[in-house]
Image 1: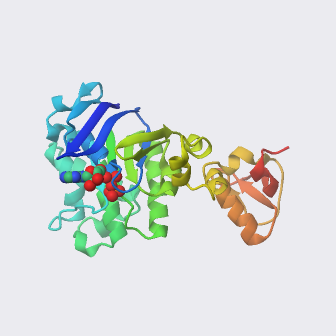
Image 2: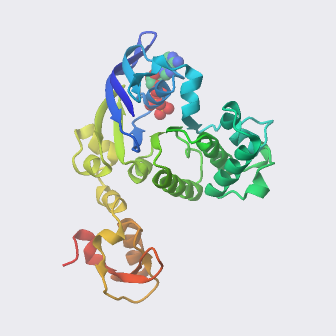
Image 3: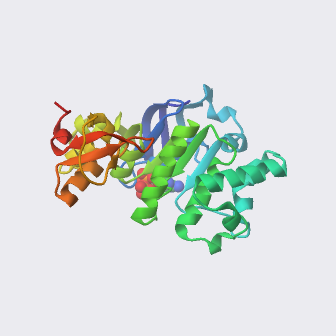
Amino acid sequence: MITFEHVGKTYGDWTAIDDLSLHVAEGEFCVLIGPSGSGKTTTLKMINRLIEHDRGRILFEGAEIRSFAPEQLRRRMGYAIQSIGLFPHWTVEENIGAVPRLLGWPKSRIRDRVTELLGLLALEPERFRDRYPRHLSGGQQQRVGVARALAADPSVLLMDEPFGALDPVTRDTLQAEMLRIHKASGTTIVLVTHDIDEAIRLGSRIVILDGGRIVQSGTPRAILTKPANDFVADFVGREDIGIKLLSIERVSDRMRPGETAEGEPIAADASLRHALSLFVARGIDRLPVIGPSGTLAGAIRLADLTGGPT
Ligand SMILES: Nc1ncnc2c1ncn2[C@@H]1O[C@H](COP(=O)(O)OP(=O)(O)OP(=O)(O)O)[C@@H](O)[C@H]1O
């Protein structure tokens, strides 16, 4: 869907991006991560031509992005950023409907889409659609920013630290919503973050940048278990690597179907990290597990966290 071939970008005499090659497949959730100044935002903004690359080629659906008019490209690529950039004198509905209006959608279709998106992002449509951004909390503004980026069903969603300035609880909720939206829509997403836990949770692929170059690109598991070098190992954090590995596996991967246990159950799609937390907090070594339909599906034991059931 998006391919970088030996791409470079220089600001004055500073090489921000150097010989970057990367393929983002359709439907992929690709997370760009790296230290400050490593070139994440530059890479992201080159995709919708907010920044022009000066070496190599960037292909979108097989065509060099320079062959598209920038506006045409941006209407097909939703863009959400940390500072949100909502229009202050427009209501929530007008903000979310900005691109559909440009595309000439009829009013009733825009209204229906706004209702749908507000619902999707857990903002009651009738309470929020006529409000101005200044009458929303930071987290609510950020949700509207994400809704706006999704409004015209873009084939690509570009996100630059979209949850950066949020408290941990709101961030956690929005991350869960992004995963749900990605699963339901199959949209190709490229997201920039400096938070390795966010990258591990969201990414189907993580691309680690340093000094304008890719140092490693792979699944969260590959990055955690086979870091390409010391830089990556340090970056992902050597000490709590086991905890991070537990966060990418589900209870359903290790549970014992049909076994029973006492107490408040855990969901089969919860992470093993969550299970560990419950074992420790409750001082127990067995937990009942409920499946997606809400019925008891089995149990998981503390020992299962270090290996599959025997
Ligand atoms: N317009 C510009 N003029 C000159 N240098 C720039 C410009 N924009 C970015 N840079 C430099 O290019 C490098 C990459 O910047 P970029 O914003 O892509 O990094 P980043 O990884 O997104 O950083 P951060 O995590 O701090 O946002 C940095 O060294 C930055 O100072």
